[in-house]
Image (cartoon, rainbow, N blue to C red; front, side, top):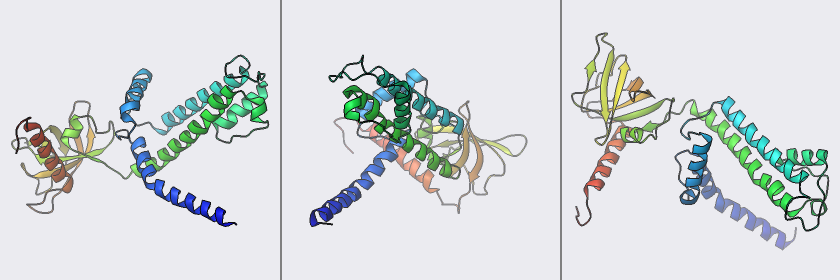
Length: 286
């Protein structure tokens, strides 16, 4: 290989390495329902409008059947869209060469091929396809078919890990509806003083967890850790019920009298900082 070829290869590898981390971070934010990207100010309103029109709750996860159905319907609509363009290209604009419509079998084969990202062609595009067919039909699938593949790969990876991953949310975040629906998560903070109530069965207890800004009622049936006390830090794992009560399946123990679970300590400090920021009015300082 010549020197110019080696230079081109080196530049390609350097450029690929340079964009790997920022691209990965961007994709993480895109695939996170609560993630924020640079395009949110422009595309966010359109995304939320699309969700409302289609009745989609971005906080509600799909099971494998819903995900498969959504993928198949999305691909079917795209395939039919491309097939229609190829069959009607002689009637559509951006066809200065006056190309005729593709035959039914060729249009179907091409539409399915580009929908599945195989991009099989048995013709010369420049002498068969109008500009509109190439742009809106074929180039369109070069993007969305790859995006579908990324979405499926992300779903498989997330499903493989989510069985063992339980996320933490503070009472403020639960109040802001950032916590998942119908899925286990952890909530933590401090046990509000005077909130601990024991039921007649001797095992069921009710208490309130606070981060000093918001509170969430918790119910738990089982034996509490020995060092569980009002006014002390706690982390509970479970699900949020439709009544707004957090039904804990586990209450995590502390190591000693002065121990504060890291998640709870972070939630408390974050809430205190937000309260302090809200208490500072324009023209005053601390």
